[in-house]
Amino acid sequence: MFRATREPPYVPDELDLMILEHMATDAGVQFKQLAETLKADQRTIAKRVSKMKESGVLRNKIEINWSRIGLGIAAYVGAETGLGEKDLAKLHEFIRKEPRVIEAYSTIGSQEYFIKVLESDLQSLREDVLMPLEPITSKLTSSIISSQVKQQDDVSLLHFLRQRWFSHKKKNNT
Image (tube, rainbow, N blue to C red; front, side, top):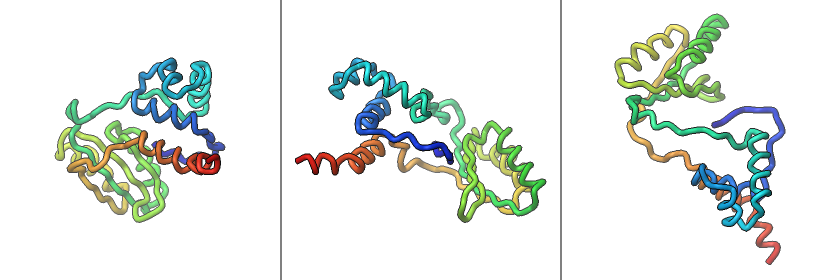
């Protein structure tokens, strides 16, 4: 999840990234197994994981497949404001209180707001989510997700970062 923050970033080293890669593949991996795989001390692994949790880098969270429990319609909604502070406040209130809005961002670009909505059917999406948004926005667009092209892949991104940040050290050591 993207979060704009002014906190200084946590600067992971290569071991941190390898720990995250393995945990992203198997969240239930035991520290003992990680230590054996990464050829590190088990206490070191535990300390690193604890430090990453304390700094907010690593969170324990379940992933729910919403379509398997009936919320098979996912839509990305773009919204523009421009109707005044009162309507902006109503938009923010709607976004915060509407449980089917699972993500929402203010953006820089063609849409001021980008909202992800889950619902069980198109009619409910239209009547219960989009229609209440229309009067408090100056422009509303929606795109219904028909198929997923790529799933979030933390492991590949972590591997890429590890290669980018630490491959030069290996080249310089040879």
